Length: 245
Image 1 (tube, helix red, strand yellow):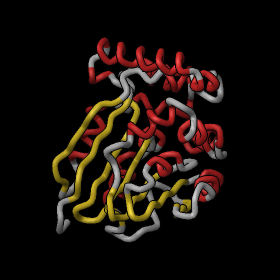
Image 2 (tube, helix red, strand yellow):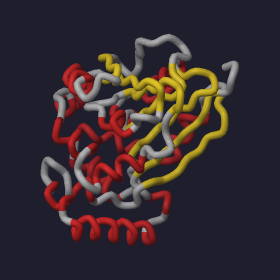
Image 3 (cartoon, helix red, strand yellow):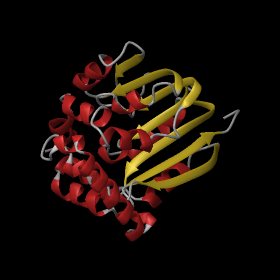
């Protein structure tokens, strides 16, 4: 089975339960919002490439003058479009974005690169549509984290995570022409809510329990003390395009 077929088999349908988990489920939604807390383009236009059902755009409301999203799967784009009249959605391939050069003051790639075959093409295309002075943010899972490694081993459509490391993501952004300073931070030491509260195989109802939420928070703090930062679950990388480029 081809790479595209494996991805389509897993992701082509909209997943309302995942959207609810990401935006409304206690504890999980707050963690999602915190992961994106320092991203946005106040007063500008923000594009998310590979927006899925629109959960990230939901958390980015109020952090840009206009929010745009693209996804290659029509069902996901249609679902995201229905989440609010302020969202502008299109069906498009991440390697061939239907926008002019410099159209956006911010571009977000969240959990996209490990799903594509030619990562460098997708990064270059995101950079092309970014305006001078704008910011590109890449948020990717880190395979050196035990939970992420288990996901890569268990789910064929997630095998691209085996290529997802902080060093590789930094190198992919370091080579961009005319970039400004590169900031890389690690987030979420051991996000057990992604397993225990998962709507597919976990117990989302646990999120309604203050005791369960407290236990998850305590476990996360313990993991933060035990795991080296380079092994935390998420890489958040951000760089800017210098004016005049």
